[in-house]
Image 1 (tube, rainbow, N blue to C red):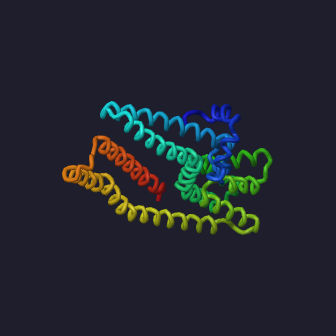
Image 2: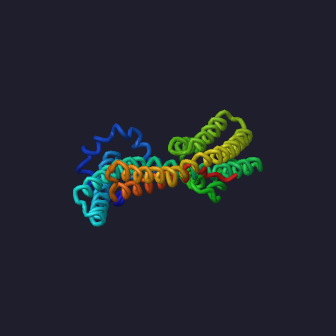
Image 3: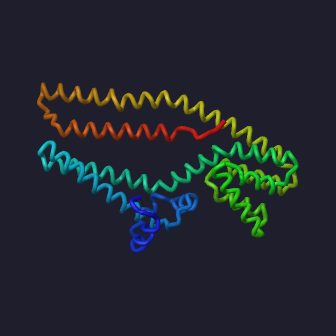
Length: 289
């Protein structure tokens, strides 16, 4: 987004009705904003997303149109290509910005899952040593376990103000974006309520998480083979084949392959490569085993 959330709230408040037009596209936006800790109304965020995407599209339209007109001298074709490129960018930016809270909460979930195994191991060690659940959680909150320690510190703070430990853990289980952390919290809460020991439950959680992380690493390794092939096709093979065909057809049947067509091909190939690189990076598992 082009501006801070505070500025977005100020100018988007008057246009909340416009933001509601996209409500059907983002049914879970309210939950995503809460989990991403973004203090803004969902309708305000939708309009701010539309406005930001529009500004980016206009800037891209001006850049493409001016560049192509300068290089080719064809003003009409340059404006048409710039308009098409701006329209595509508007749709892409709108989708990305609307999904940004979900992406943020997803990244936080990955960070939680990355440190969760060691946090649970620390918790298991403390409980096995005879410490109470509250003391063990306090030690985890003081550790270097990223978002896990941060969330547990919030639980400890609530308990210190008089909130029962089980209630504070239930609130965390509801608000955390990590399904694994949520599952671990509910199992610990239910086991504590039943009066049984939690050591076996935590040990089982650790074993399952380690096995799943190893499985994710293996899956990513297998996916890299296909993704590498896709990148080579998009970056080398397909642009080369299309360029060769355009030159051959232009020589024999005079289809009129112009400089604009080659420029558009280069731009499309560039963005396809960026998309594949971003997808490969997003698929990489955030694990410590």
